[in-house]
Length: 236
Ligand code: ATP
Image (cartoon, rainbow, N blue to C red):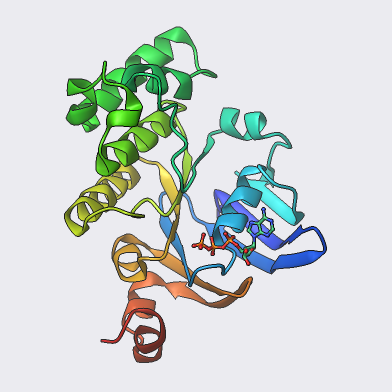
């Protein structure tokens, strides 16, 4: 059996003295979409930040069968990329400059090629390439955050609440794009409070509650489980 692309084992994270992630283990198989669902404050964002190395954690993080590089930069170089919940765009810079910054670790030739790919995937960003990022709509900002992440040519894209604050139609569009990305060979670890929508596009899922995994399995099976639907997906 081939090793998972990302393997988290017994991850623990504390803020000060308070431990908020209590030993989470999780695998992302190559070519899959894995979602982490759960209520507000469950520790989902903290888990993604630990996987990216943005915050310290204990436990082990293996990427492509080996310990993940220590630094965030090393992880980006190795093909990991995180799109944070607040998107963190450079709001006073243009769309194109935001994209260029996403590719800063890649060569000029790679950046040029990838920019073309990103514009093909997001024609709206191409139309608005000179627009200041701070003036984009919510959906366009999320597209720019995704596009900027793609500029680093990731193999593993970690997305924190990409649907946050977006209208249902835009959520469907963004999650549709996430599905298409998987078809191009990018593996995805998706954190979502919008559990139903996340499970629809995922292969596997983990339900996290109070910093622990409560349930995990095939996303389709979890979406069909009456107890889970009742408690976490807002009824049948
Ligand atoms: P949400 O969907 O609301 O972002 P979440 O599942 O992503 O929730 P986290 O943001 O990871 O949850 O938060 C987990 C717990 O850690 C919460 O109790 C939160 O208050 C706490 N927490 C998060 N960041 C910090 C911090 N910088 N300092 C102290 N506590 C924090």
